[in-house]
Length: 253
Image (cartoon, rainbow, N blue to C red; front, side, top):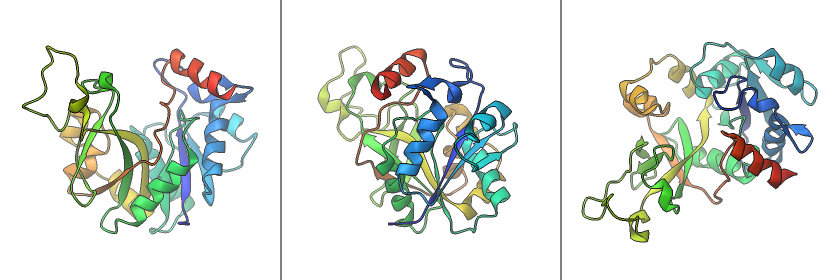
């Protein structure tokens, strides 16, 4: 199995659920559940990255692998780049980004995204996608879509519906099952080569990144390549709302 490390970016601030990483789920804080999923993946090292002393204090109750980072980062990728610099990881280290609000992430997907990166030598970054099966998500801007080329490299990510089926789509009628064929929903899980992250962090946010509010577009804008694998599992959604939290509590309770 490929060797990789996992970094879990965890922020206290959240518009809908302040203090989200510390919310109790079945007697443990959410960040502990996420940490456990990372450890179950077989990663050789798992690091929690945060800019908040409250999260640091709780995390240090179950691991000493906590890295305090700047509060100025605008994305989880920028935060992970700081971790790589601070811990002096070699450029060829494979680093997986697991968001701190994904307590139900199947550990196998962490391994898969690392393997996807390893099998695409021309890419400094990899991610996963799944076939879109929920009709309600086809035109939902919160469900990010991705189109990849024949070699498995991303062409574009968008909150809009891509590819747009000109001769099929009609918003005046209900979504048909045939409309979903060939449409892929992006999963917010990434793997990087450590050397790639230094270059990424030095780049300014790109115009399309700002327009779509999708940090991975910075890579495509600057001519980089992102490998896209089709996930072997469809993970449950992360925790963004009180309803999401209730669903996860039921699953882990």
